[in-house]
Image (tube, rainbow, N blue to C red; front, top):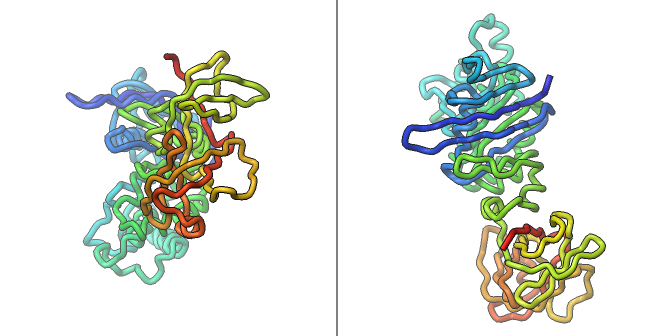
Length: 366
């Protein structure tokens, strides 16, 4: 038996996009959280609904723990109610006329009254909903509504949990606060989870495995940190928010390091991602991996030490995004305190440090 989701299928819409899922494998670890990530319209929700059985693909197969849920060749499609999944839609879909306890109990068809009540009480206690039993959804905060929707999905003890944009309907402060809480709850559940988001911070905070989609296709799959830090191509780099992408020329490869010329300047990067004989490359550098020092600052171990001029600073929540000119454009992301300590302002001269492992190379043919 192969654990987890194993799926390859195609879903078509008349006059619309084609969603192609190729070799999706989520693994069988009960604590694994797989994130379907990509821009709006990339096919994330359709993919999730096909896995749930709410949409039927035109061709392909979907299996979970070795059990066939869909097989176009066999003409088989297991209905959603027999897949034993928990599904939380984007808008939570709570019944406005039912109180919290009744919303949670709604999915427990066929259980004896005592067992149903016991499960509801246990789930509400675990999710911190005690005291809200008689409240209607309209009387709850966004975070409370989210927990009620999650409680309704897990109270029936599903084999798989599917969440569609679970934080998107919340205001920004609440969304930021609940990211860590939601991941903690999902890990406690021990149920394999697949969730959809178009928010990079949510993907990084919630997921173990990342599936990047665009225009109905899977572009890259892997551990979250690997995909974000080592995108497979420029399309993935753009989707995961790589701030600096430069065109370079490989001049030397030695001892696992590549020397790359960018606009007349030499940079050193790890050569592990380069195929033999690679010449033209794109260099990908994330803003948080750029370290800034005042001119004359203490020596550092970073191989790439660049003289830079600050072009502009822009606030980004608690951080500041800094645009630099190093003979080529470069972006950095620092705390406001670090900016104050460096006395950063437009026109200031600084030193930019970038460690070789923090420059990811994508080769291409000219």
